[in-house]
Amino acid sequence: MESLQNHKFSTNLHKVLVFIFIFSLFLFPNETFAQKQKFVVMLDAGHGGHEPGNVGNGYREKNIALKVVLAIGKELANEKSIDVKYTRTKDVFIDLWKRGEIANKAKADLFVSVHCNAHTSNAYGTETFVLGLHANKQNFEVAKKENAVILLEDNYKERYKGFDPNSAESVLGLTLMQEENLDKSLALAHSVQKNFRGSLKRKDRGVKQAGFIVLHQTYMPSVLVELGFLTNKTEGRYLNSKKGQQQMAKAIAKAIKKYINQLKLNTISTDTDTVVVKNDDKKDDDVVVEEKEETKEEGDILFKIQIASSKKRIKTKSYNFKGLRNVERVKVGRYYKYYYGHSDDYQKTKASFAKAKKKGYKSAFIVAFKEGKKISLAEALK
Image (cartoon, rainbow, N blue to C red):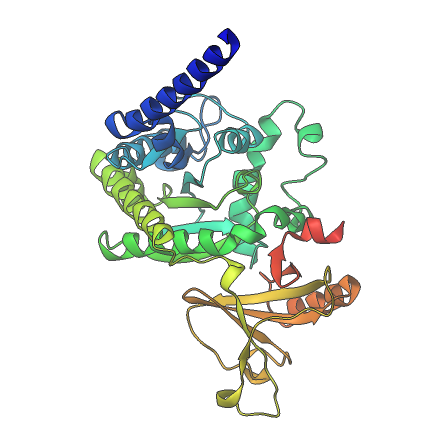
């Protein structure tokens, strides 16, 4: 009898505790749940400590980058839905690999690295980079300069497994882990440049792809912003001023807020809603039928080469793609991706990749699909 009463008491107590818990969720909002819903932005001020970055006209890149990053963070901190974190908040040197590790451990949703440019000429203007194969020698030179910081790190040969910042071949292997974040990184990069060009009237040197180690080390969409050239007297003076730093910071913060809002509205889409438009050069492009991607059998893996991504809907005729035939157009959200070399044989895909590169698609890269869904190339090759 006593045992039965204890059981009833335990059951009733459990019901009361559950009621109190549910009631408290409404009366006292749980901070843990709110925090989980926050969008984590990792801000990275380039260089620092004994590594000043470029010192054009006597200005120090490390100081300007830090001031701009802190100003960006101040702007973003006004948004309750954003959690701002930093790789450094003072003048200290942090290894490139450590910056990525900080972002990854914080489970950041976005990584933004800020730098200042330099050149032997009187070049000026802003440019924003995403990780990719350097499209030309100039892009490679910018990446090489930033990557050279690893030579100041302890045990860099072991940490980077023989990576040579002066070797173009070393850069080629940096893109695999970030390939699936490319479209999101590009969306943010274009927004940053648009703000620089529009409200600030800065010279727009464009969105570019290059092999930056600091971007490679992160697992989330990432961009590297070059604020301008300290070696240009006028631009260097502007970037070293409080007004210039505040204006550049606000432009970047505005782009980040827009990016986050686009994600909330699902206007930056993933590959889950992919629709493929298959091309037949013998037919008129207007009568090509859209169809969902199919695979031969469950578990099949298909490889393709992404040669372009654009908001423009381009006819998939060979004359639009430097003679490449059988190009597929894939609509993802507001963007169109253009694929070449559809095959379940990786070696054949590598041959097609080489052909695409030879045709001039220097920033092309191989992607993999399993059962119609995009997977990482590393997973596919297993």
